[in-house]
Length: 153
Image 1 (cartoon, rainbow, N blue to C red):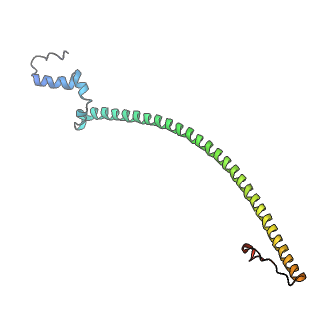
Image 2: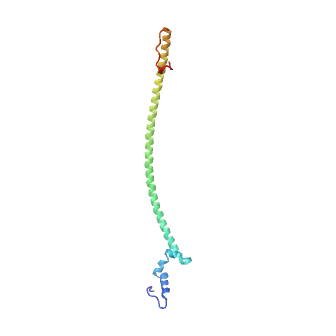
Image 3: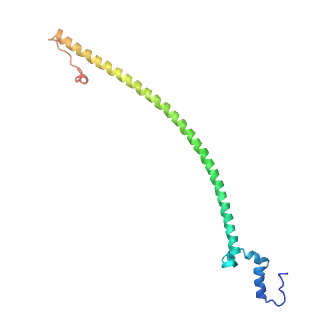
């Protein structure tokens, strides 16, 4: 059948309708969004085709998103591993610094304890000397202690 020339006796509006619906261009019109809006069986093919296109587009977008997500997850995993390694190195360094500071604190405590021990030994000795001075020379004047030591002696 030649779609360019209508058969004899077919009015041109009917032929136009048949050409659009059943002709070479008509088949493609059945798959359009406009055809999908037709009610019932008239738009069934259009609805099916449009839904198929949406599904394919969504599937494509989801697969693209999945690839992006996978790449992003790999990138973040590598970055997380780098951060974890850095954090572990920081922990090791901080533990060493803390151990060093604890050693210094203990050393300072020992020095302070030794200094306090010597101070109280000296104060005890000064008290003994003052007591001895009062016993052997009661009339002699004992020099006064400095203000800082008044409460201790």
